[in-house]
Length: 499
Image (cartoon, rainbow, N blue to C red; front, side, top):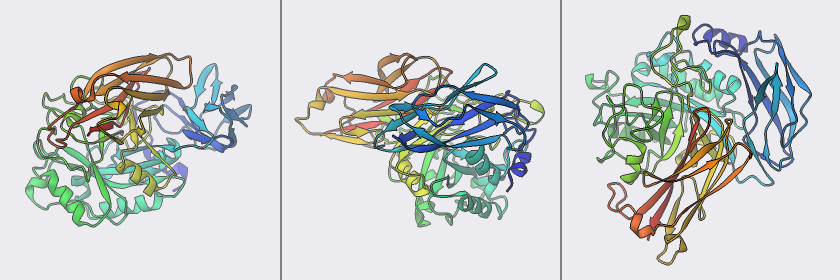
């Protein structure tokens, strides 16, 4: 589909937010590696603006060679530009900087390694299209979903995860989603992932998304009255059973678990470590990290043990992702989730939409899928911050087993490496067994922060014992970064199993 055709589909349906220039570079680079700078000029409607004119002048940029003096914006490029041939020289860090009309413009940060241990890719796994039949005044086609994600927002992967009730409405909907996932998936360029949203009433599992590796996977549907509506009385276990019996490679992820009117409590047996490796901790609807947080859930928070921290205390082993749950079909955009026609703005939704970061070797659907199933992930409200956490030989999403004589039983150093994507300083919070136990601040003066958080408690005294889903003793840590501009980042946990 030509650029101008898919852009026309979205005109006039997003809340005006002003012009924004979006610069991105790969988040992890090798010393000497050549790479592109991608640029999108977003207009007041949240879409690429072909009519914007001006000149972006590049300043001296850290760790980068090969930048021209400027980039001229004007008609004929559909608001999207690409500069090839830049070179990463580091050391350690790279970032493109410039200004337009005295307005500073910077790219996301990049880490530069002689031999990169992994790459970081960015995506949105929770996008609704018009096939969901839920917000027809603002949703767009599945084709628009993937084109916007790949070409405008510069995402590396995405999933159109429509509501089952919308998919089942018309027999052409699921084949359309299958076709789009197959057509837009392209190794080393963009990973398109097939998925759907399966909702279940309180006590039945709450809201969950399912994702498939294969394009010919089926969608779940039970043709009876209790499957209809936005809170079907069908157990989540039925959906898991269906996906297993399909013979396809899949995983599921819960979201909005703490929402008052349709929550998922974790003090029961509804949990399956084999099929639900990650937890959507944030979207434009709010955060389910903990009961009291900076991003309350739309329609209110429950007082039940229905949050990420409650799941950890019960022995659930989730990594974390964030996504938009976007109902304007603009993944990776920064317009309000609930923007609508004629400038009308809904009552709910946060400005930041949420992104999932995966750490893996290369950009293929299989590689992204393995990273998600392996919990090699972290979550951000929107910015492409770089965060790494290590404890002993374990990193995000991994497990560490202690012997009786292991020195880590009496002293555990959690090492955090951080390059924020927002101006100003912030704080790093260490969460142990669902409780905040340590804090450290950082200033904006450094590009790469190396922070050490030392837990000197006796592991036998602080270990969780008898948890419903992991009765053997363990300690679990994760890090939350509270950054500037209301940006927040969460790492997947590290589990310490106490032998």
